[in-house]
Length: 242
Image (cartoon, rainbow, N blue to C red; front, side):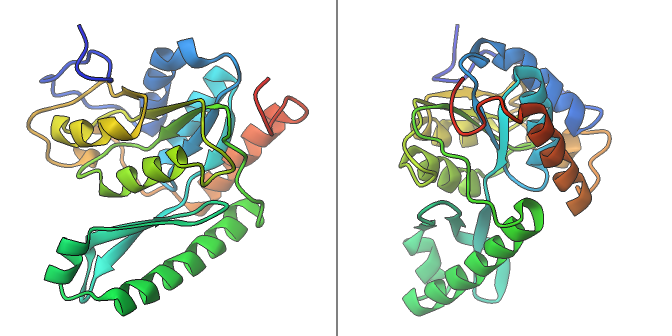
C-alpha cells in the first residue's frame, strides 16, 4: 500500500536519528533501486549536504548543491513570501497574496531577489569555486534535505528542477527527506515523480526534534563533502549518466 507517490512509512513512530549522516544512510537504502544509471543528488545547503553525501556515496552518484534562498517579508525576514532558486536560469516563486498582505510590492520583491542572487553567487564561489551546476537533463535527479517543515522553499526548488533550470528536464525527479509532516508532502507531491520520506509524524514540531545531534553544518563540512564526492567520481561520468 502506498500513499500518493511516496513510499509507505511509519506515520506515528516518534523516531530520532542520531545525526544527519545516519538519516542519509537510511534514505540511501530506500533509494538503492535508483542507483543505475548514475543519478544526480542535489543537496540543499547546508543541512541537506551531510544527508546527500551519504546517499551519493552509497549509490555512487554525482553530488551537487541546489541553492535556494527565502524571500522574506518586509520587517519579518523569517516569514517567507517566496523563494529564489539557483540555476542556469534562476527561478523565482512568489506567493503574491501572502506578499501583498505582508506589505511587499514588486519593487520590494525585485530588490530582495537581487540580494539573494548575490548571496547565491557568493555561496557558489565559496563552495564550488564558481563552477556552474551539473546538468540535470535526462537524468534521475534526487533532491535532498535534512527534513521539511512547511515545504515552501522545497516546492520552489522542485519546481525549478522540474522545469529544467539546471540544464534540462530530468528523466525522473525524486524528493528524498528523512522526516516531514504529511500535509507538506501532499502539497509537494505534484512537483515530483516520487517522494521517499521514511518518517511522517502527524504531530510535527520541528525538523531538529527528530535528531539527537542537530548541530549547524559549517562551510568546511560542505566543502569536504563535495571534495570527497568529486574525488570518488573523477573520470566516472560526472557530467551525465553512466
